[in-house]
Image (tube, rainbow, N blue to C red; front, side):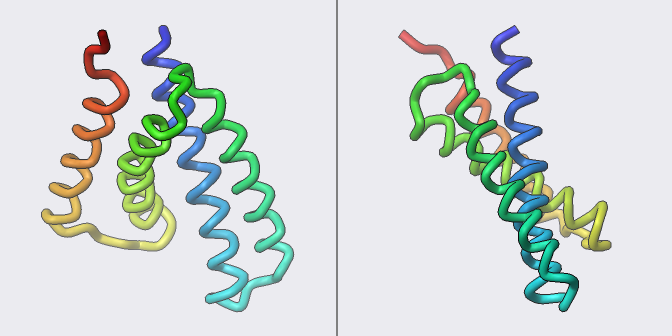
Length: 110
């Protein structure tokens, strides 16, 4: 159950962080309303709270592993919301990152 909870927390953290950054990007780069940036800042704060709920107590391990989740989530966000089409190298990079997440977070411990 701990692994499933951890994966769900990583997914929620990705939605909050990537979504928050995307909202700020929309306000700053796409000349959308500035209140979107405010919502983005709130989402980014919530991301920090969700990341702190990971079952593993080691900050460095959790954030290092989350980096791989962020890479995969960012490309997926781009595909779904911005029409981005990843190359096979993008996909290969995501797979490498997700293997890294698995090794860092769920590998055997003493």
